[in-house]
Length: 494
Image (cartoon, rainbow, N blue to C red; front, side, top):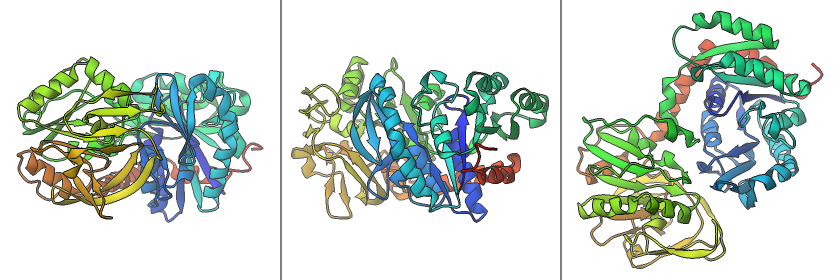
């Protein structure tokens, strides 16, 4: 079965987007395509059709393939909870927690899980497009690797190396990868792609040929800077660290969201950020919450109690109380909803040390982090407008304010809570703002003009994927990549 793998010279070189764009290009050619990432590390996750969770990027890639996401597309997912501890998710379900050192010892045993998922995808596709993680040049992590060359060699899948020219040093990063990796690993690499090129690609012709000569690998193309990427959900919190802080004075509504260390599923706010008349500000540590905010959103968290402590250490709790006294509105999503309550208890140490802490006290609710993790897609109404999304949380929240649910789900279940004055709200629904009608309802609630027209966010993302696929068809030798993929399973012999 045909397959091709994309690995990077480093993290954040654009592998996820290139895989998504190539998937859409191949689907548009009439092929049945499925995405695969053996191992991912991210707190931005999505619920699958088979009731599990996978990395957000693989859910996007599934959309690019015009299929529903399944747990097979990302069999191993690590969700960081502390600096050296991650939750281990295998085939969509939590299998436990691992410290960094433990995982390096344990990961080789996960190769069987990875290969089982890959085999199940193979029988259902014309071609599987695989994404690596980090870089094969991290040779200190090679032993027991299942994310890059460990998988490529076990599955006999040819590799294309992606270099990011925008960050500089792309010649050295590609040629240097060839220099430092094991020769048997290097033989798995068939060629390279240059990503994020600004300007005329002809200006890099000499450099391109020098990479070919020095590495012995062939080039598959130079991908230009893709402005359409801004319309896609991001998986990696690194975008929050690098994103410029801008203030658009012509935007009447300001929505602020503080960035906590274990912030998760922050792409919930993407549809609002792309809505006319709305400015979303992601607030970095060391910066106060803006006094002109119309709405403060506390987003999801992979370590709710730890992020709540961080929020207090930053003084954001004081800013939030001042915002409420000024008549501002607050929305908590998932972990953010739990923070707004009176108490959060973690009796079994699900997220960290066992114990109980006081919440922010803005909602009369209490949360206990226990029980089976909720993983399901949902739909319903809030603010008299339809929404669809998903739940991904552990714990139960009860209390007087749940008698005023923020939303009503289609199955009749109430969701969330609301303060007596209606200005403080909490919900367990991720993806709340995906539908245009729901965004319009929030704009009206915040005093803005009703949004004229607009599209559901899924349609916006779909349009961006088509545009990226078209650009890749223009700048990448897709025919050569297809031919390369057909050598999977018989590649190491070359």
